[in-house]
Structure formats: C-alpha cells, structure tokens
Amino acid sequence: MAIKQTIKYDSERDKSFPQEIMSRPGCEKLYGCIQCGTCSATCPVSTYMDYTPRQLMALTRAGFKKEALGSLTIWLCASCYACTVECPKEIKITDIMYALKRQAIQEGIYPKRFPIPVLAREFYNMVRSKGRVTENFLAVMMFLKSNPIAAIKTWKLGLNLMRTGRFAYKLDSMKQPAKMATLLDKADTGWKGGAR
Amino acid sequence: MKFSYFPGCSLKGSGRAYEESLLPVLSALGVELEELDDWNCCGATAYMAVSDAAGYVLAARNLALAEQKKQDLVAPCSGCYLVLNKCQHYAAEYPDVATRVQETLKRDNLTYKGTTKVRHPLDILVNDIGLDAIKKRVTNPLKGFKIAPYYGCQIIRPYATFDDQHNPVTMDKLFKALGAEVVTYPLKTRCCGGSLTGTVTEVGQNMSYILLREAMRRGANVLATTCPLCQFNLDAYQGDISSDYHESVKMPIVYFTQLMGLAFGLPAEKIGLQRCIVPMDLKPAAALAK
Image (cartoon, rainbow over all chains, first blue to last red; front, side, top):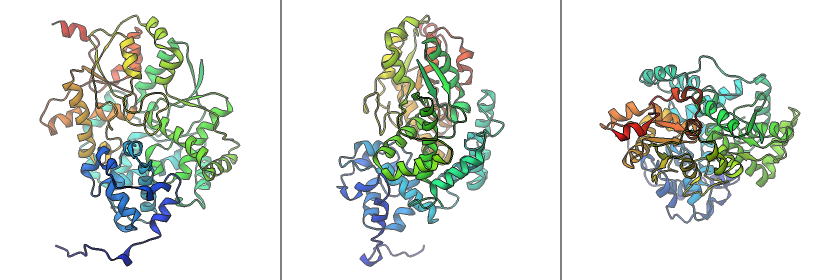
C-alpha cells in the first residue's frame, strides 16, 4: 500500500486555476456556489463518481487542480444538464465539466486507456478527417485504443445491428473534408484553452 | 411548410429508422424537409470535451447553410438539437464566440448571423400543424398501445424551447391523439446514460435498466423516444441487462414518428420498424384480448 499525503497545505493550491476556468465562456459563476449539493442530488451518475459534482466545484474553486483534472467525475458526466437546470445559483455546471475535460486533455492529466477521454479524442479525429462520424467505426477505434478485449464481448451487438440494417460498412464523409479540417484548426488557433 | 433539414450522423447510421419514419409522416402532413447540402457533424457532446471554439464552428456552419436558404432548421436528433441551440445561445451571449465563428466561416464564404431558428419535429407537429390536423390523418388508431413517453435530456435541458422542462407533455398529447394509452412515466426526463453505455458499460447499462424497469412496472408495452442514442441504448442491450440483473427485461423501443406512421396506416417496413432489435407487437389489442 502506497503512503500518500492526504492533507494539503495552502501553499500547494494552484490559486490561478479557478480564474483560468472561470475565464472560459459559460464558467463565470463558479464563485457563486453555495455548496448546497443540489447538483449532486440531481446527477444520475453521482453514485459512481470519485468526487460528487458539489465536491468537484469546491475543489476547482479552491485551486485543487490535480484532483479536479485527474478526477473520474469529469469523464463520467453524461451531459444531461440536470445540475445546470436545477442549480439555484445558475452555475452552468455541465459547461464547467467541459472546461475541465478540455484542460485535462491538453495537460495530459487523464486516466490513460480510460475509454471516455479516448472516445472524445477519436471523435475529434474522425470529425477532423471526415467531417462526419460513422458510429460503428468510432466504436472500433475507441476499443482498439482503450480495451481491445472488451470489443470481443460486443460481437452479438454487431450481429444485431447487421441483421437490422443499422451497421455501416463504409465511412461517411463530407465532399471536401480537408477544407473542414482547415476551418476547425483555424477556429482553434490562439483560442483560450483551444486544442492547438 | 418547408424547412431545412439537418439529419446528423445517427439518422444516417444506427438511427436510420428515425429518418425513415420522420420523412413520410411529415410529408403526409404537408411538411417538406430539404436536407442541407454537404452538412457536417454537429459536434455532439464529445467534441466540446476537446475544443469549444471548433465545436461552435461545426454547429455554426450548418446554421449558416440554413441561413443562406432563409429557412428554419429541423434537427430531429436530441444531441444535434441541443448543440445547434447551444451554439446560437453562446454566439449571442459571448462576442468572442460570435467573432471567432464569423471569422472562421468567412474562409468558407459563409456568413453566420444567428437568424435561423432550430426546430424539433415534436414542436412543429404539436405547435405548427396541431393535434386536430394530426387526428384527421389517423386511419389506424393505436388501440392497445400503452406507451411510456420518454423525452430524455437534451431536447428540454438546458434550453426548454417548446415544452415544460420538468414535466414535458408534447408526446403525451400526441399519443392520445393517435388513440393510444399513455402510462404515467415519472422518469420521462432521466438520462439514459448517453455515450457511457459504450464506454463504461456497467454504468450506462444500469441507467438504461432503471428506465426499462420503470416502464415495465408502469404497465407499458412500448417505450417511445425522440433520440437515436436513447433508442440505441435502451433497445440494443436488453439481452445483456436481462442476464446482468437476473430479470427478464423486454420492452420495444421506438421513435415517436414510427408510432405516428403506424397510426397513419403506413406499412411497418416503410417506417423502419424492422430495425428494432426488440420487435414491437403491431397489434397489441389482440394480445390484450386473449
């Protein structure tokens, strides 16, 4: 069992981190959080999270960058917006989750081979190269880069999709996907928290 | 009535039954959908997790294409519907986002002003066409159908544009107009698990199980959905869910447009009903009479 420091000193907090997150569109109201826990109560995934949404808001606001960006919570958020709608302080919690995900990907602080960030990256790559997404190809890429063995278990699902004509045998694409990729890269360049 | 139409990736892929039923149903009611030429992926939930600026450009390009035609844009998939709406809200609220989007699209000779309205088919059906006109078109009332109306997340959250955010009723009214029975379904806006079903299977399947079990307990014989991802999650994993939870879970999952098609007397294979992995009984009244 590894011995870890469990209590943090004030000097170890990254005090610029909350400012950085709050500078992203949609994330301004983080400091208004009253820690009421309505977000955690409405969240259908909070039972699986390492930090509940309320705890994550507190960690982010206090500058616990490593804990916030390294959490499973941000990846488990399924984007159902229940917290955002119910928050009495009108904090867009879902959008803060997105800002944290983007930061985690850029800084490379996310659980490697964990399928959710892998899916996000593969989705991004497929859109950049084709302009569209072909679902079953995306699923294959995700499995290859996270857990190839898990793919084997999905054979029955694949057969069911083929039987019902819901399986795609070739990649869908825009007419000129390269043009789209140029646009996307242009959009990202120099943008705060952009991917390039 | 004529609209621009944004199918999105799912309606051309695993959710093609949605498109196959939507087009003939709307056409029977005098609505024409014109597919956007060379549309691109809306960005969905995954893109925002990597890049927000490029995500807004993805959505805005489609909106700009509809603006060119001076048409409102119909987005049937809940994911697309939300992302397109979100882009418009953010471009209106944040000048930085608007400038970035406009400057980027200029390179593709497109302009984005934010004048196109994003519309959901349910909104058009109930508010533009009206239930009376729909009732008149019903030739095959849905007798014996006990429907759990499942709205999911993204057509009512965070932006509730055409229905109540906590207790949406558009589909409830629609199904009653088709002659069906609507069961009380309190989980109608609970999340299905979204992409978690494909990534962290045990979490996603638990969320789907909760929805399926509730529909069964409430006595539904079919669950109606508005979203290709909800349809997929709830339909495709019932075998796995049954064995994991040691309980026989069996519930056909169809699009609201397929139920409309059936009530309009369209043949099952013309409205994609053969694409359900869990098949739906087309004459449940007979089964109930036994």
